[in-house]
Length: 295
Image 1: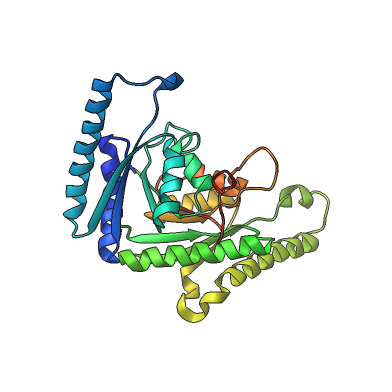
Image 2 (image 1 turned 135 degrees about the vertical axis):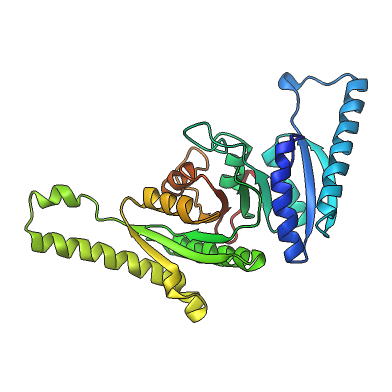
C-alpha cells in the first residue's frame, strides 16, 4: 500500500523480498483519499493528479521488479483501509504490507489511522513495517495470549504460531514463541495468607499458563523445539513487548475483536502489547474472520 509518500518504499522492499523468496507476486495499491467535504478537483487538476499516481506506480513497480518478482499495480480513490480490504477480497491476497510512520512518543500512529483499521478489520495478516533499517527479519517471535481461556483464542494462538513460522521459513529467520504469566494480587495476598498458600497460588498460575502454551503448541508436535518457547513472569503485555523489542525483528500477534457493542476493538491485551512495540509486527485474525461492514 502507498499513498505517494517515499516512506512507503520501506514496505515495498519487505513485500518484494518476501515475494521473491516464496515465488509470489506483489500488487501495489495507491489509494488517494477524497478531498474534505466531497469537493472535486478541477478536471485539469484531476488529470494531473492521476498522471502523478501513474508515474509513482511505475516507479514503485520498477523498484519491485528489481527483486525478480511479478508486479501489478492500480490506483483507487476512497478511504484507504476500505479500499485495501476490498482489494484483498477481490484479488485473494495472502498478506498486506504497510509502512508505519513511526511513534509519536506514546503509541504507534496505526492506532487511530489506516493501520488501526487494518489491524482490527483485515482477515488477511497485516505486516506493519517499522522504522528500523530494512532487511528481512533475522528473528521472528510469535506472542501468545497470557490466558487463552476460550477455544477461539487457543485456535488464534495456533494460527499465530503458524503464520510466524511460515514467515520465518520464508525469510530464513530464527523462530521463537513467547508467553507471559502473572499471579494477580500476589503482593496484596501476602498480607493476608500464609506463605504456603501463596506459593500454591503462584504455582497454580504458572501451571495454568504452561498448560495454555502446550495447547497452542499441540498441533506442531516435535516440529518446534520446546527450547524455542520462552515463558516470562510479570505483567504479560509489558514483558512480551520488552522481549520482542529486545530480541526480535518481527513480532506476530493475534487479535480478536470483543463481542461488546460499539464497534470492533483489538483485544485489550494485544493492543497493550502493540502500543509498546518498537519493531515491525504482523497482526493475525482468527480463521474465517470477516469484517462485518465488508460482508
